[in-house]
Image (cartoon, rainbow, N blue to C red; front, side, top):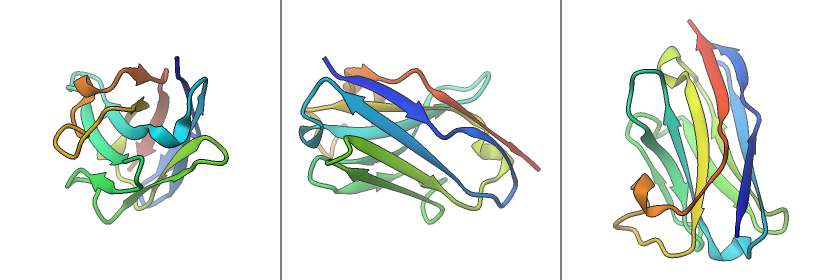
Length: 125
């Protein structure tokens, strides 16, 4: 059973940068694809970015060019570097992992079996 723990959230201003981390334990991290999702009050959870076990990366259009997803399999950690933040990025950010994803469903939160508790990111304008 994979356990995920996010960290790195906080309060920032428009234009700031934050880096989120997702530490995995209890599984073979290198075999898992990791996705980042976010949810703000009154909105559906949405896909942000993902990195496959093969390091292929995927982004939502709203964050492309501003966010970068990466992973360090030695540290069992995935990262989400967020630059040029704006108020629309305010949300609870979740990391998720699964070992059976394909390019066709890596953006689908329902395809992930393992989720972290989330970390709040608040951006003031």
